[in-house]
Amino acid sequence: MTTKKEVFDFIKIGMINTIFYYLVYIFFLFIGFNYYFSALLATSIGVLFNFKTFGKYVFFNEDKSRIIRFIATYTILYIVNILFINIFNYILNNYYFSGFLSIFPYSFFSFILNKKFVFNQKD
Image 1 (cartoon, rainbow, N blue to C red):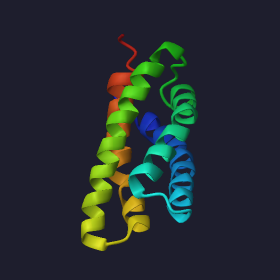
Image 2: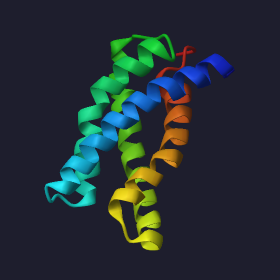
Image 3: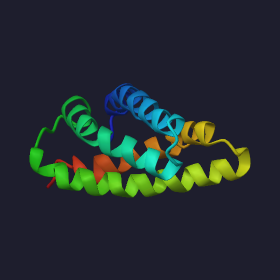
Image 4: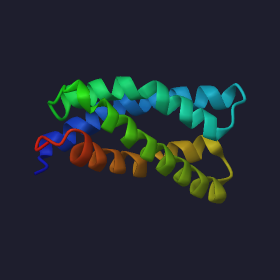
């Protein structure tokens, strides 16, 4: 069962993780990488940081064996992110703003997948 505290902690820690991700994403866009590669690098760099912060401070599960599930989850999230960036960019024609807007659906899917698949206490 999802608690209000868990959702609040996810949002709080997720904001830190998201700021880190977005800064890396726009840095790589700024230096000339395309948005696919910028998002891939930002996701890849953030994976270990996110695994530690979500596991410890949100889901209270520091089982390092779950890293494989976490990487699989972030592979799926990368694809979801690219899809939303494409959708928003089709409308807005701006990869910076499209990357920012994609954060919101990405965060929703991230919470669900992390809670149900990665840090599920029943496993």
